[in-house]
Image 1 (cartoon, rainbow, N blue to C red):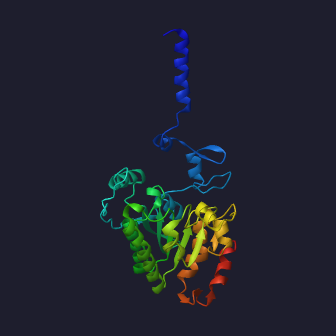
Image 2: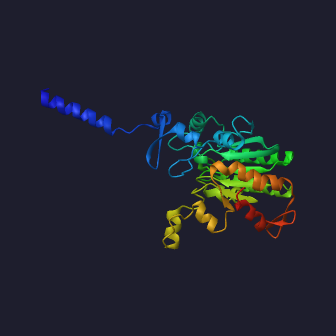
Image 3: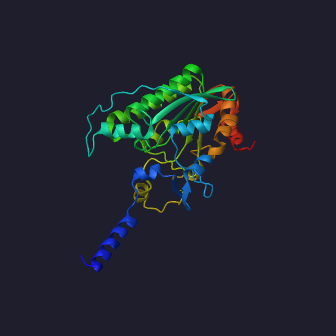
Length: 314
């Protein structure tokens, strides 16, 4: 090999190194992540509750991180939930379902996408549930359905307000009919909350879509959302192709959903605990919820009057 070929060979090697994209494992282990202005230190993002200080983007977080923010670090107890058989339908595609579950569990340190915790805010007991998007896209299957129902039953048994942070793309195809059945089961469980006069507060996080939106996530007595989070059932392109009209830029984002009347308020992550406690949990815990012609009353305070108070600043 003469010197020209040698130089070209080295040049190709350098080009391959420069062009090589880092693997997912390398990205996860890195101290850096990316946002609107490029690289940002993960530590800086964590110190700001995983919200970008420049653009205000609310990054996705795990269930434990959600509980740490809501209750304070280590100020809560995780509630164990039943885990049904892993692969009831013996599902196979490019990879076995059991292998996908194993990978998701190792990645998230969770048995399923949903976690339930109990804790206190200013001496008021609260049961809280959350979904981790990193666990197979936050999809709901039998284990997740059991976890949600367990959380609801715990709230009923202990007369706790039930707060839930939904996130995910819908029902898990690997358990198809069983996963779809969780829409009905969780909806019926929410009805039990209503029958027992237990406050049910939903706070949408990015993204919430599909069967999650079409079932328990839309049934809250109070529905809050983080800024600019996706709240949808069908995808934007599907809807645009169906209605054959141009859609708003913020279509299906929490600001647009608020305009359409499906949300009560949009709350930044740093204010969530304060808002949920001062404007909902504290007041609702002292009152009785009654369902009358689909209007919620809190001890003679009409729902629309109650919502005005949510918008007020302390």
